[in-house]
Amino acid sequence: MLFYIDPGTGSLLIQMLLGAVAAVVLFYKRIVFFFLKIFNKKKLNEKLENQNED
Amino acid sequence: MKTENSSFRDRDGFVFYSNAEVFRFIKPTYLSTFNEMVNNGFLSKLIEKKYLVNYEESAEEFNFTEGKVIKQEKINFISYPYEWSFYQLKKAALLTLKIQLFCLENGYSLKDASSFNIQFKGTNPIFIDTLSFEKYVEGKPWSAYRQFCQHFFAPLVLQSYGIDKLNKYLIENIEGVPLDLCASILPFYSKLNLSVYLHIHLNSKFEKKHKEDLSFKNKKIAVNKSKLISIIKYLIYNTEKLKLPKNKTNWTDYYKEFTYNEANFREKKIFIEKNTALIKPEFTIDCGSNTGVFSEIASIYSSNVLSFDFDSSVIHQQCKVFSSKKISNVLPLVQDLCQPSPSIGWWNKERKSFLERLPENSCTLALALIHHLVLSNNLTFNMVAELFASFSKNLLIEFVTKEDPQSQRLLVSKKDIFDDYTQFNFEKSFSEHFKLVEKSELTDSTRVMFFYTKK
Image (cartoon, rainbow over all chains, first blue to last red; front, top):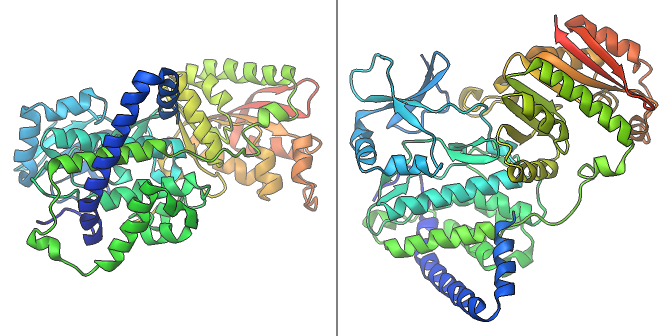
């Protein structure tokens, strides 16, 4: 496996760990949004607005 | 035909210019990938989404026996990451990630994540390198992840912690902010932030530990596609969450707090509006634009406006304003006229200096600027006039007298060695390079507006 730029071995290795963490965080986020959608629409809107703001 | 100096890294092709148009030569080594991306609609989808610059088949004939030439959409003003505000760098980072996500979903991957691959059309980023895509190989991690962290994530994180002095680090190191440097500068408590810990602190530790480790050559490192997509989505989420700390600079509230009375401000606006409408410039350059009020006026009559200021937080604000007002012909940039971006890289030619990139014969606005240049930076009127004359056909400039409170403010802790700072000398110096078209004193004020045209 060769690359166009030097990817850095550490930065490749860390992706194996990152993949797992990312999946967990994204899953948790989806659960939070799911419950907010049911129980707290106001807070959900606030969250969405915050995300859109730069 | 002239080859672009920075277009040497990629062996699959290069950019060149001919008759003021931009072309890209695609070498036979990349041709099959390129044709495939054209045939399966991948490139056109990227262009449709406004992710990638448009291109067309070149009608011109060039002396290439093999390969292919395409004509690329032209960017009005080339800017570099060290000239962007937080807003722009963040937008550019998100665009890079969105492109990588789209690539993965369509069986491709970005082979690099350099911030130099992004340009701005107004306040919207666009990807300019049509040859940055490669076929995705199952199990292969994202080779550009470290580059993404160095070019985008690290400088954004630093700024989000209030460390904005490294904005210009890319001038020093074209490879971005080294992760170990970033980790050592960030406050200790930044380790409590999971994304900062992972992408910066832990990443830099891994880098150090595995520097000589070449195990990836034996395919030991495998990340499957769904995990890779999760990583990119996670990076998008992390980048979206980054924000500048809420501190005010002494410039952002300039118009609210200082000196101008309403009538004067209105007169000045009318002067600028009347004359830009008369000139109808192709390019307007607003030097020291602050909140961008006058850039906005100029944008009505000018095809392109370049609005720059040395304060990155006002440029950040300008981007927000122009983006929300959907004004698409103003490019705000962070730039200090007293120390503009130098030319950098190989032979000092890879990335051009700011002044080299300025269009000739522009209409230049220099409002409430002359007292800063002369009284703060000790420049002479002659030096200023000469610089403006080097790129301006028309010049709308405001003279701020020494009695003005703003001039006095600059002299509070400075010895007044500026006996020559008079309107007479100002006019004398500028008339050496320019012809006076109109002069207008603002009522109840210590300021005079001038409209000059180059001799």
